Amino acid sequence: MSPRQLFELEDARAAIVAAAAPLECESVALGLGALGRVLGEDVTATHPVPAFDNSAMDGFAVRAPDLAGAGPGNPVRLRVVGESRAGRPAAAAVGAGQAVAISTGAMLPEGAEVLALGAPEAGRDVRRAGEDVLPGQTVLRAGARIGPAELGVLASLGRSLVRCVRRPRVSVLVTGDELLGLQEAPRAGAIRDTSSYSISGLAHCGGAEVVWSGRAADDAELTREAAERALDAADVAVVCGGVSVGVHDHVRPALKALGVQETFWGLALKPGSPAWFGRRGETLVFGLPGNPVSAMVTFVLLVGPALRRMLGRAPEGERAEAILDGDYSKPAGRAHAVRCRLEQRADGLHAIPTGPQGSHVLSSMLGADGLALVAAGSTGARDGERLPVELLREWTG
Ligand code: AMP
Ligand code: MG
Image (cartoon, rainbow, N blue to C red):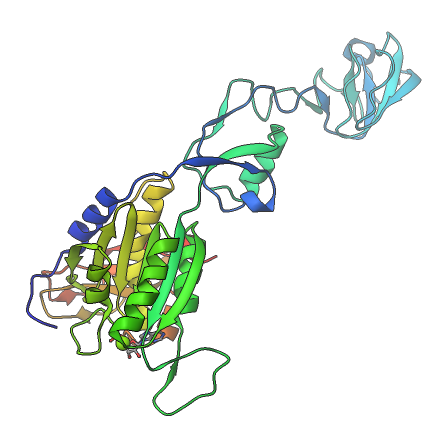
């Protein structure tokens, strides 16, 4: 690397968030297609859930006064006059001296309570209307991610359509003469292209839609052509590799030739120092380092805030504080993002580095729960020191 001015991670993130704008909303049918989407509206209940008082048990619906004083020595005989099944209410109310057989979830006949065994107090085993959700209650807020529970709650409100933020369109371009697709035969000096997979996976987990993916050889013209396609398709174009200062690194000049305005080049972060960021109109353009770990780490730390902002969510990644296990030394200058496993122990959350931290050691991302951030100015962190950790759980599927 040249001794140029490197951007501090937090400054880089602030510049990226400032350049990203929330996307518009669209109607999405409630179903698996809505899973993972981000709500673009506050969801307020118009009706109570449950909509009617109903039974929490299989048994008999009776009038509480009829059973006053009932017990093993004082049986009370009630005439069974009907049945209330789930979805099929009884035809008539329970009268004095009467009972209605009732199933769990069945509508409560007027005037009745549910009998289990013995003399119940009034209201026992009754699930009241609105116990789950009251009318007018805001159940979900804009910016919430729709997971399985959200899907179910939206269904309970009868919402067949929900407003979701449009998914950011992401394109992924990998560069390098050495890269091999999975169908290509191995050859001397070639390596498997991993970033097409891992970076597309991160984009997908981050709520984006990967609309284009491609590969370019280390050639100025081919890189420019491929970058043009990546830019045309996307809200966010991600280019992996070729963004350093080598004679075969064509990405920066290609992006500049295509009218992308550079915001920064060079990050005071390991791994990730060659990272580049710019924009062309509304399109955000990231040049990520080629090394597979660096590409993933910089995607999480730089592209992550942009995607969250576009989706109308808080741009900061989820963080925790954890106690470092073992000494970690580094020269002062750049911050380090250390892949860690997190473990809850009696004295708190511990961060345990996942092993060799080389930026080519992609398997060190396996089982990583977070990125422990060791400050740029420090010469490392001691065993037992507390560090901020950017959590990876939103990126794990
Ligand atoms: P570069 O940033 O182009 O200098 O690449 C740095 C290192 O990352 C080199 O060892 C490349 O072979 C490797 N690399 C670049 N792109 C990829 C990719 N898509 N998949 C796996 N390794 C890559
Ligand atoms: Mg390269």
